[in-house]
Image (cartoon, rainbow, N blue to C red; front, side):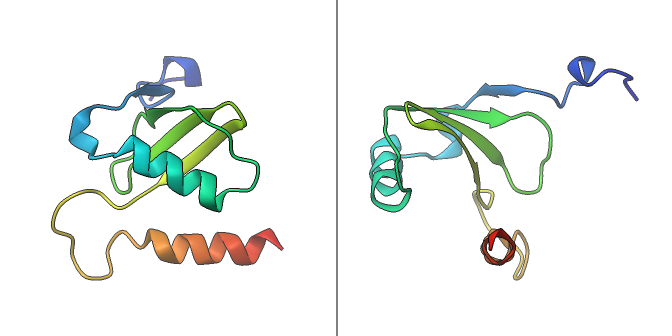
Length: 94
């Protein structure tokens, strides 16, 4: 186990390739419609490490955002419940 976080292979972000299935025009439109104060353009990066639910860093003119989503492909029922995570975080926000 590494002593310094900066030396950890799971630290930081990496470019997002086409294999992650993002439609950036659609994503940007959704952000404009649903995130108060959002202003594009947006760049997308994947946080290194963590394999269960991919987590992405969105860098936009209005600030930085975090996006978590289910992995692509066939999933077991009840697995990767990012919708449940969103409900919990929303409830805790207040």
